[in-house]
Length: 210
Image (cartoon, rainbow, N blue to C red):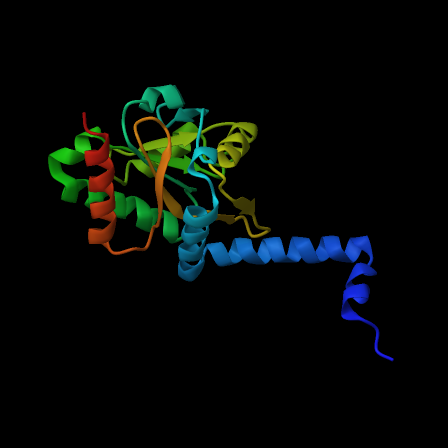
C-alpha cells in the first residue's frame, strides 16, 4: 500500500525542510533580478503588502559625507530605488533612465527627490559613491551607511539584498514612489516604458502639490 503523501511530507526531517526553504528563497531572489521577476515583485507588493508597512525613518550618509535622514526629504515626493556601484547593468541603466525621466518632467521635477540607496556599503563608501554618481544626473542623491544601517533600511522598505560569492549583489530592482508624508504610493518596475514611468511620477507630484 502506498503511503499518504501528506504523512510523508510531515515526516520529512527538519533539516531537509530548512534546506528546501533556503533554496526557494535564493531562487526567488535570483528571479527578482530578471525583468519578469521585477514585474512579479511589484505586483506582489501592490497586491499583498500593506502600504503603511513599507517605508519609515532612516539615517544614512550621502555622497558628500553628510548625514541624511528621512526628515531631510519630508514634504517632498521621492523616487527611491536600491542598487550598488559595481552593478553591471540594471543599476547604471536605471540611474541613466532617471535623468531622462527628470528631463521629461521639466519644471515639475523640481519637487521630486530621486534617491539611490546602495546595498553594498562595504565597497560603496561616500567617496566611491560620489565618483560613481558623478556620471549621472546631479539631482539624484546617493545614500550609503554602515552594514547595519543598510540592513535596517532594507527592512524598513521590505527590500531584498544578498551578496553572492562572485561579489555581485542580488537585490530588489523595483522603483518606490513615496509621497510627501513618507508613505508608499506605488511600486513600479524599473524596465517599464519611459512614458509610463514619467506619467506615474507626474501623478505622484501632482498628488503631492499644495
